Length: 402
Image (cartoon, rainbow, N blue to C red; front, side):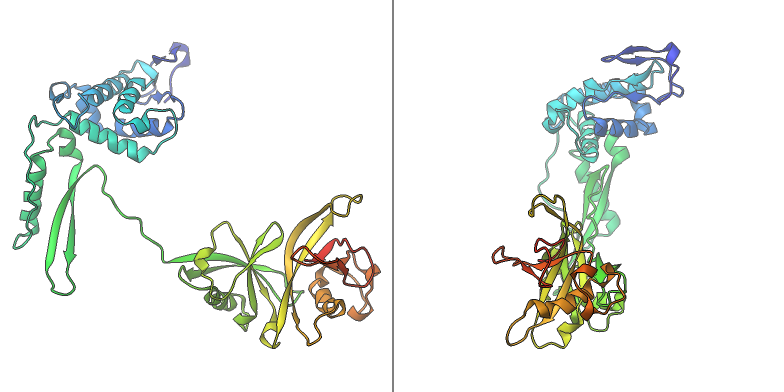
């Protein structure tokens, strides 16, 4: 809150004295990482009826020190002292150390100076005030559940509240308590069970579970002249990768979804290639997903996919000092009876690398001097010799078919 700096005096443990610009608008000193507590106290301090109740010291005669579920009145006393200090018009900054110490004694999870959950603190504080101000010195215990048969909701709720008030009765419950109704219906016999459950301040509401997810996928088209495009596809969480391909093909206007290879990209490499049977639920939000369009997969009897990884030289003094960059590509080749040779790879690879080549020559007449990079092949298993795809040039390539 605002204050007149010229009329303020400072004490770390006692707060900062001075007249605030508006009554009750004061700062709360942070005791470590206790902003979660301060924000909670600021909110509850602006609850008019509760603050007026403590400013009038109405709580003093209500404190129940005999309640075994209470805190010997400490929570109510310390909160009352804090509220009176915050609304005294004598401070611009107040230190809530007394209340924090009291809370920490009865709830050890809040005893340190680390960040905690504001809602959990609020629930404890309200419940602590309720128990410290409970009007009942002795509490009746009725273990018998209420029978809902033949009773109207009005009657059943009244009976449930009366039963709850036999053990819980405070000004906090009067203002912050309530009940929520639940109903269970047997689908076989049709019998019905209704119940009213009391709550204090907060109602437990389950978070709605989403049945679908939005999956972002970058599509690399088969036509090298078409730039890659990112699509956001809404798909059920239970869907398979095959279904993701169907959704994606419609969005990207790809005729055959079976020509898509779905892969995860990490550090400019293909980290994982997904099978059709895999679930999209295995893809987490931070994963970078690409889809490569490879039309040959729909016509070739047998094919193999080769990932293409781009490397740049970090040092010209060592052939091992290469660094990956950019986005990888995928080249699909038809497998022949006699296997594949570097010559079989040359044409499809040059087609995939067209965006990086500026030449008026046809593919068949291109030589290594026309390319701004060299191309080599090495086994993904880390064994075997590095093979220069074009038959000459530096085998430690700047662009690598890995």
